[in-house]
Image (tube, rainbow, N blue to C red; front, side, top):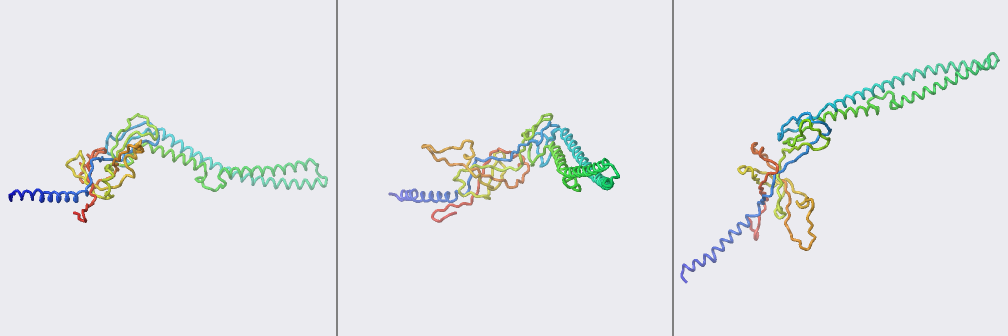
Length: 345
């Protein structure tokens, strides 16, 4: 065997396998740290908008797919019915105040009548006593004594009647005539009706609950039922829902950094971090979850939705181009290092 042939044999049988083993070991030790998936999509809160009162759309104040701020009026319902209801409730409250004032005045009037009736009772009793004394001496007829007795009984009964009326009026005023009207049940009921009417009137202005983009707006003249969705607000709070296999999340934890690539913006690099993990796999949220009770069961690696939040985006133009539903590629740096015989990179 020549020297050249022996050298080649040493290279192919010794050096090449050693180099291959070193390269393979390096690739193994350096791998497993970054976990990547293309099964990721941009998400945002989609808020159905509905009016809290029914009515006809009077005017729409924003354009379709317009960016709006929190609290901005989107559209306005016809306010005339609710304005009339508020005026009616205000009139009812004023009427209750008048009725309570009248009851308080009648209470004072009854007190004056009772004072007068007691004066009459005293006079009737004095007259009866005088007639009784005269009748005992046979100076007056029996009929005169009967008339005096009847007058005394009528005066007594009148006081009882007036006192019952006074009690009725006092009960109508809540048991205490000095109590403020604002504490009376009828006043509170009328005031609540007025406040409810004012609240309903404020609901004719349908406002954006959060900042975002509004779409599917109603048209002027359209009648809207209370509580029925008639527009949609896509909030500005974008995040990514990445579906990793259960083996990929073995070393994934909340707060780990994420590199994000958006298909629509291939030249822009985004970053973020792992925010949270779904409490169940994606199949558990399916309408009909899979049942693996049959004898032909085959293990399938499940996917777990992982929520990834964006770091602050410095480019405002790029932020405007991010839309919910867009595809993304995410790579999570888990920081995990593989080891072989105690060695790691």
